[in-house]
Image: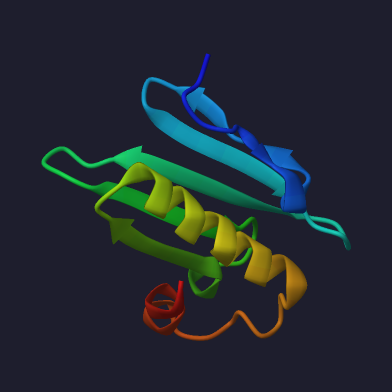
Length: 100
């Protein structure tokens, strides 16, 4: 049993947990999907990445957080923004990561 809620209710998806790696496949309303991964870094912190399948280099967003819940929240927020405004998300990943 996980020590956190594994449901991404607003995104119609669930976190899958295996060997400390958290991942989710989020269906998009108009087809396609977004994938999310949160992973512990070797020294400290948690790395997160969100990408639109088939989105190419401009379809990837990532960041690092000190705590797992913060990384999960940042990844979820990014996926939610991508779902709400997919065309507006084609901006610089650093700008998005700073706002997440």
